[in-house]
Length: 291
Image 1 (cartoon, rainbow, N blue to C red):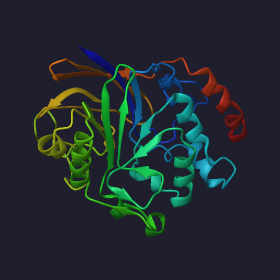
Image 2: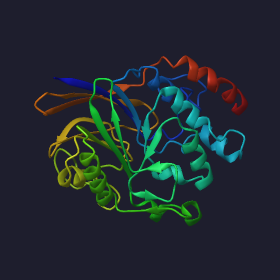
Image 3: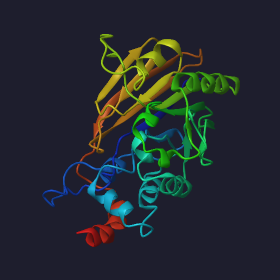
């Protein structure tokens, strides 16, 4: 029996939840509130995010520099979007362990990050059964380069491990649990161009190419480099990446045949200019307060 699923994937929102351009004060066709308005919500869709959610916009700087006043706004917006799984980005540690844990605890969804230890709200893997019976195994990883950038006090009690080794162990666990589709949400990019193989960046920071070459995930969702790429099949893994600031999201259509063969198509979907009414209503008083 043929079974299908949809994945909607964002990454590197960097606090750009609103469709308000902070420089001009005008509404623009961008922002997470616009992306989420076209997410489908059904039993065969997964809505995922690749991290770097909390830091990067004037809005979230205002939220977190104000102390305890609005600690869970990003989580509320992710919940309104129906996000089911997220991973951690390097910038999510920038405000410290306490705000990060408050954000994760307020999420309706689960945080998967196989190479981060010491955060109780973080799990390594998850296996979900969709409405059509398809068993989807998920894990997440983040760039192992975080300790090179982050202030030590923001990593108190936290260990960031090698991402490829962690992804390998997670993949073996998911296969042992009977996953029919395996997905890795990776807050890292490609150290080599996924089409030409030309070196692009530090292979200790970005390891997407290596993961595709050495492991056999069905899908690798990447971020961190802020490059819009879709429709790439690399060493048997389908992979894509989205740019930053919620200018668009990636939509993947996945089909598994009765023979066990899996096919994936992905495309970049513009945020559009119609915001989610509930999210815009929630943001309105906060934007007035921050004006």
